[in-house]
Image (cartoon, rainbow, N blue to C red):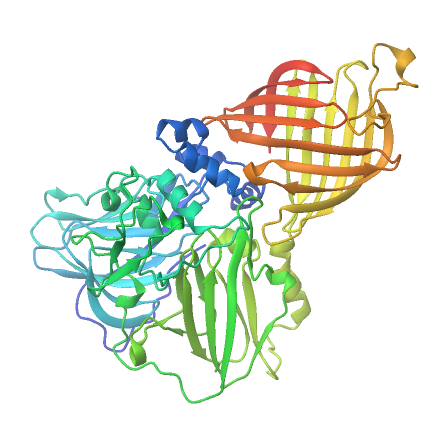
Length: 622
């Protein structure tokens, strides 16, 4: 269920007004979307054509970019996490409003009701005049286009130039499809369609923005705030043109909307970066352009300053503030009458629309006393933005990312007033809190099942933001192939969750050359210990660590005192649909295989295993 809630003023504008609710549609239950994101399947990228495989990197001259990306332990970048089957405007993909004629002005009240998409808004009939945002008026500002974040709202005014039908185009940020509102009647005048993003250009940019620890680098001389420098513009073909790296220049400048040039330092981290953020004939809205028509200064009162880093990682799809989910953090206590200032730094690769319940806040954007009032702020990677509000409404107020799947994965906090009276509408506050915490504590089932002519191997996992219970198996069709099962439970550590200590139980049985060798086999492992891999029933404890290039190193010891070190990686993207996996360990076991993705759940697969030999068949991925 979704809809638009409009509160009209006593005196509204005397021009036609059309509410526009923007949304997405997917032929999949949102619970399955959420589970799939945590399962780290790249099926949505396959559907969108944004996999950024090694074959694609080589073809486009970006092999070094791809290697650097994975050396920094980053997955392929994306603008939106989910592939949607359709995009809707008031419930339709194409919406006709033919009642307008030349010279008419129309106010569009636009609300982004999407679960996870940002939308570009553009108009074939000329300029777009922005007059309000998040329910608050702003001084009118003319632009060629603007981007609207999930749950953000804008009121805009457009003019019908001639007696024709002009397209108001709504394009998701990943530019897979679009929706349209047609204003006027007669010959149709289409808006310029946006070309697909250049993902490798964006990947190269992200490589330069992120250090080896997964932190965004705040570059000296580049003040990132209020959408002034949209780092994503390197991906937009209509702005950057040819993505081929240009010859290094002594210094580049980035034009701003106020006519001043921001100096871009010439340092090694920025080499080869094409940063032409705007051309003179394309003006995109940014927050510095928004100015309130009246003063918005806060009343006198004590000042409370809070700072948060927006954090998370794509590998396990965990989103946090200061590396804590909602359920891992305490409520933030504020006092009625305080002025609360919040400084936000986006230390992640994704942009986040942060929303505060119950209050409008001032967005400190250089407009002084006339800072605009909003309740959503879109924060791009590497940005540091400041908002402030007067605490004047008792309650427990949610402050969270409004991308549905980021919010459910933990990116939020609860502001609560000290010494506030009990809320009679919440008779059981502890139960309400548990229900809120249940989102990011939720466990998700995922796994793979390989069925091939040499046996079956696979893994099943039950995991949430921190914990994982897993069991993997290698089952041959007879004793010579062997039977193995490892069941582990552990907890991921650190912001990027590269460390995974675990405990568990390992069962391994195999006949080498016949029953006579079940016992007394003196085969040695690489540590010189007598191997127990053919007859092992023991507890184990170890730690796994994600290395550069996304390989996982796993060191453990079992209850018999035997050590094992294992090195491997799953699902190296060879082409858009072909994935490579490999493993080798000190018990002299090894594996290599290929998997071709046919559908979301089914792949054609083949692998060679030191125990089971060569096989081919199907792999079911869930």
